[in-house]
Amino acid sequence: MARRLAFQSARLRHLAPSGRTRAQAGEEFFHLARQRFRGRSQFARRRQDRCGGRIGLADGFAELDTRYALQTSEGELIYVQNAGMRHAAPAIPHLGIPAYDWWSEALHGVARAGTATVFPEPIGLAATFDDSLIHDMAVVVGTEARAKHDQAVKAGRRDIYEGLDFWSPNINIFRDPRWGRGQETYGEDPFLTGRMGVAFITGMQGDDPKYFRVIATAKHFAVHSGPETTRHTVDVQVSKHDVEDTYLPAFRAAITEGKAGSVMCAYNRVNGQPACASSFLLQSTLRGAWKFDGYVVSDCDAVLDIYKGHHFAKSQAEAAAVSIKTGMDNECADYITIVKDMHDYQPFIDALVTAGQQNHAAGQGEQHLPPEKSPHDVTKRGVMGHPGLRRCCVVGVVIGSPFDRRRMEFRHGRRSSIDAGPAQ
Image 1 (cartoon, helix red, strand yellow):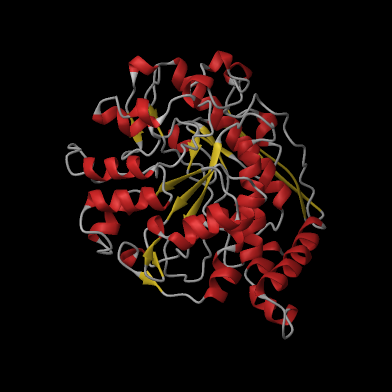
Image 2 (spheres, helix red, strand yellow):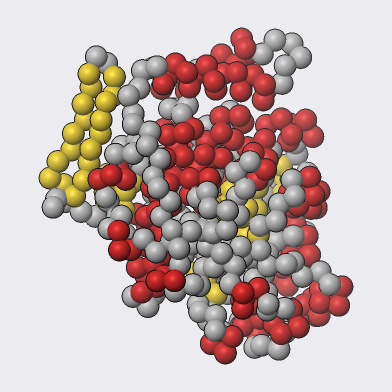
């Protein structure tokens, strides 16, 4: 029945008499759908105990200022300012800062980094209309993500997909089925997407007042929903009403309610400005109206698009400068292009320093605490694929391990338990 409800969002028109906004209609439809789904479900909803703390901000790292950063070498400058030109930041040994890779993924699990529990894709999760269930799932994902990071650090690795910053969830609005990435989203409804996004973010990040478990990244900000072939060049012309009523509500909820630690700016332009250099999106809306105090990361090579795709800047260096000045903190640029020579960048760096335009590095994190000192050291708990974690919410399949059992029970038309686990 949940599936039927999920694909009948056309009913919104019957819930929205004249004068009611799409968001108001969406909220009413969401609560109706969730109530009906819960009436047919016997999922257990036990929230997991917190598994150690957030990521907290190291005292030494917090004291690094721009003047000290500028004394370092060109490659180190990128890392210390947290306005890096690459997702894989090099170590700075004399400052005691290890290498770190900002790029990790967790849309419905962290198996991209090896053995982990894999949940249904977000479009399927949205069909539950059950945000508390998604929250419990995200607790599992975040706990396994933290465990993977701690295991990697103890093994001496700082590789891609093994960090503490996760580029999830995707809370774009799935308007066009030709997009090709709609399965990453929670569908076409702004309110439902917002509820699922908040649930995912709070589950991933945890509820400790001082320490993140991991950092969740709401993406792709904003008005980004295909088609893929034009995303690097397209200028999306959208009315202010449509922006506020359709494309921003989920992000607003993710920031103001979910307290997401990070936001990823998109490839496309919005009403003439590239998303990663948009004063409307990054300044007026994100940091202005919503008081966002986390960090903004670009989609990979989105800053290069400002120069080559949108012709908004005359060079890649100028594109980087305008995006940093507008509010982007971390540029993912290793995907295609690695900057090897700072010569072109230096005039813009000097100008930014003189004008005092560097963004305060959000980082928000004690990413570099040794695992044994972190309140989130979960490696000793054996959390990877743990049956207690898998049973807390929706079906999860442990990828990378042989199965000795898989049980799905249906009693009186209701799903009562799902168990999937590796051989012992």
